[in-house]
Amino acid sequence: MQARTLALGLGALLLFVGVAQGDVPWVIQHVDLQEELSLSDFHISPQERAVAIQNTTINLNPGGGISGNAPALAAFGRAAQNWQNVLGDSITLNINIDMASLGTGILGSAGSNSYYSGFNTIRDLVSGGADTGSAAEAATLGYLPTGSQFSAYVPTGFDLPGFMEATRANLLALGVPQSSLGGLGTSDGTITFSTNFAWDYDNSDGVTPGTHSFESVATHEIGHILGFSSEVDYADYVLNQGGTGSLYPRPLDLFRFSAGSVPTTTSQFTNNSRDLMPGGTDYFSYIDGTIQMSTGRYNGDGQQASHWKDSLGLGIMDPTLATGEISLIGSNDLMAMDLIGWQIVPEPATLSLLAVGGLALIRRRRAA
Ligand SMILES: [Zn+2]
Image (cartoon, rainbow, N blue to C red; front, side):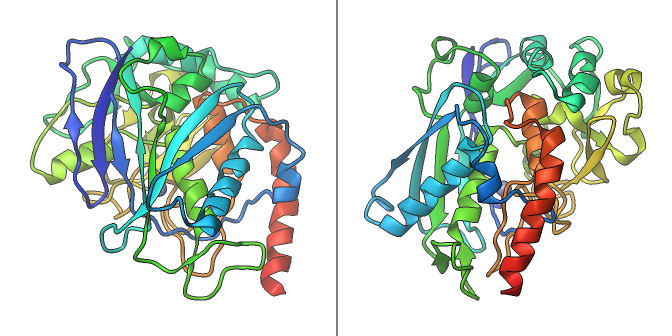
């Protein structure tokens, strides 16, 4: 497998340090994401998440801009713990963290180290990633299209050369050994926070009006590195530059359909075209349910496509975060992570019940 380095810029630059299209292995990609979040309706309280088994380890490696900021480091640690509490894969992730002056309106950015390989190589890993007890996995993973069955709507002039791409963290969760992921060391990516915003580093006493929850943004950015990422953002960026290119669908894109193509049967799930076009109305579909997604910063609804639809309370991967608000990992986030290859503990089917309790807790907190 080879590393593909490309920077998905949300209003920023997109570096595409590409590998020749004919090379099969994996390439790295860095995605800069502008963030502001809004509160989700489905939350799982820290107390409830703490009952989950912890197997995944997330190591944070601080850079010079954050190493002396103890409150920020502590908040980042809690963000990592938020994911560790629900991820059951016995792997170790390494994320570089820092703070720096970022562009206007950008709270933080996440650059994921990613790799690509032949379509079926990654498709088969995702397809074979079902855990016992996940109804959504049972309903979908065995029916993912193979390379010869796969089709997608792509912008005019773009093509699908037969590759898929995934973050290093996602691939490790899918069982790819580190020894197969050369070229990028053991780093899963870099998260940088802007120094141009007022941050609240401690959610335990609420978020001070006019400031942003550091822990919420950190949790969100880690979600991108885990694999919550769409190739639609790459298409959108290239289109905005007036260009065309080759698209490498990500695991998340295997579940991305336009409103008119949402599958309701396993046959349709296999055969319906995925939607890699910016714009329109897109859904993450697992046959028994759908979750609406954002459709692109430049040629879509104004938010990067690697997010749920904005401000519908769909989860931590909502694209925006208001001041004074706390956003938590929710059932939709866990459903997506489960389907793209993460072992979730407990399984999402039981999390919907927990989410109710989490929501009640949040409401009490806000009312207080
Ligand atoms: Zn984001």
